[in-house]
Amino acid sequence: MLVNKPKIVILGAGYAGLTTVARLQKSISASEAEIILINKNDYHYETTWLHEASVGTLHHDRARYEIASVIKKNKVTFIKDDVVEIKKDEQKVILANSEVAYDYLVVAIGAVPETFGIKGLNEYAFMITNINGARKIREHIESQFAKYHDKDKKDPYITIVVGGAGFTGIEFLGELVNRVPELCKEYDVDPANVKILCVEAAPTVLPGFDEELVDYAVKLLKKKGVEFHIGTAIKECTETGIIVSKGEETEEIPAGTVIWAAGVRGNPIVENGGIETTRGRVKVDKDLRAPGESNIFVIGDSSLVINEENNRPYPPTAQIAMQQADTCAKNVKALLRGEQHLAAFKPDIKGSVCSLGEHDAIGLVFGKKLMGTPASLMKKVIDNRALFMVGGAPLVVKKGKFNIL
Ligand SMILES: Cc1cc2nc3c(=O)[nH]c(=O)nc-3n(C[C@H](O)[C@H](O)[C@H](O)COP(=O)(O)OP(=O)(O)OC[C@H]3O[C@@H](n4cnc5c(N)ncnc54)[C@H](O)[C@@H]3O)c2cc1C
View 1 (tube, protein in one colour):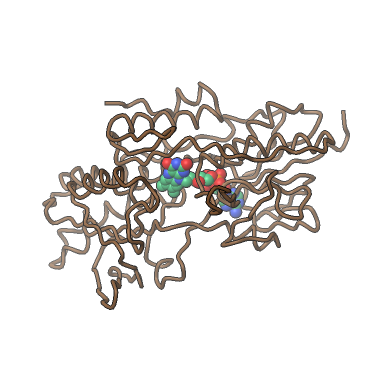
View 2 (cartoon, rainbow, N blue to C red; view 1 turned 90 degrees about the vertical axis):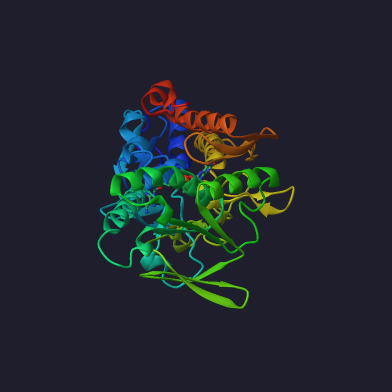
């Protein structure tokens, strides 16, 4: 038994961090190293389910589980704390309440919303970021419906603007259009008075996705009441709505709720730690280490991996985060055992599915186009698989999605 065991410190218990821990606790012995996992909450949340919790179609407790329930306590020490700073020259991490030294560091603290400097977004828009963010959105939308009968100027309360027609924006809209009829019933609001707007600066919805599938999604969302403002940029967000520009024209749109879902950047803690970044994300080496760092791995949304086929970064996804975790765990173990050869990360993109509410979706999986129920079923399989990869069958039974009708 080593007296001073090497310390493997993992920052963040999201898809990337928790999967790394799940792999490491299986593959190394308790006497080989101490695994320390640090996360700001004592629970993990399924980030890919947050749009459902934000709208209220899924309770936020369904989208999270206790970290303690999936770690082996004889191998992993869990610290619930906020990471404040990475001091790589001193090989330690500063937390809000203590500090922790490391021999090997895995940085997996995800992303933060990218606001592109648009005025007022940080102050007035809501963002789908974590459990608390989701709770706030759900409660705010409900309170807007509740206020509808209060004053003469009713419309803005029940006007909801979604900024961004990427995956997150469209998945949020898919849930919202199903929730609105319930809210209307509950708060005695005429559905005809509810306005749902999607504002996107790019010329298309779901840029880069298959056209036929995009068309399916747009038609479905339009049918359920979404107004698309494509090629329209949000210039400012105010207390009472948004200011947009399309070409030369500027327009003010009153709204009671503005959701900003138009992009993410890496967590600033990484760049503040002196690790080289591009828009906050670390362009990692093939073995997933930060450039020039022999013992720091960066994975998940904090990292950037270039797709050699088109020389563009892969979009940050849970799929990549979990695959990186596999390679990262192997490489940490190899370093620990003094091996020279580290594995290269090769993304294996199986496809992507964008949900459009609980029972509808679009997807491209293993090169096959899916729409409607088959796509929605596939989405549930993917969600359940993510649970299985961390907590095995017991976690799937506890938290899985089985509502297929
Ligand atoms: C609504 C929505 C839908 C999505 N849908 C899909 C999808 O269908 N498919 C897909 O592949 N991807 C999807 N994504 C993207 C996917 O969720 C991310 O790419 C994925 O979560 C990245 O994993 P991660 O481990 O890097 O970060 P996260 O899962 O975000 O985890 C980061 C962890 O770090 C913790 N943390 C952050 N800062 C600190 C700190 N300072 N101190 C301590 N802990 C900290 C957080 O609490 C969290 O536990 C979606 C994202 C959203 C928002």
